[in-house]
Image (cartoon, rainbow, N blue to C red; front, side):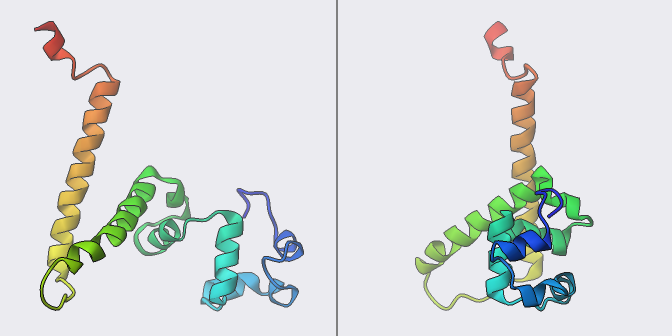
Amino acid sequence: MRLQNTSLRKLTDEGVIKESRRKKFFDKVEDGNLTIDEFQRVLLHLKIDPIRAGLVLLCYESASSYEDPCCETTALVAVALAARLPSELAACEGQFETIRQSLCDTIARKTSSAIAKHHMSLESRHNGGGFEHAYA
């Protein structure tokens, strides 16, 4: 809220949260006692990506990680996977069962490695690399 220069009063005045909920708003957020509707209105109003916010809460040590490109990339990959997986599974036979954590870890390691390699390739090109073949 500080980054967007807004206050609880402003959220109340703009109808994002109810006056009756304003006084203990932060306690309700901390205790997880906002209604889904209130939570969604706050996220939309403050333009908070709920996937990135969830990742910050579950995986990162600091709220400032929300702005980290690593967090944003992780959220983009999670959303892309969530959008793609159902259609892939629909083409499979049988009942889908949740996969083991160790397989999830392996998939995450391989995906992270692919993202890091892509980043290194971009950095190399950005720093003038990748054109060695032109001078051979």
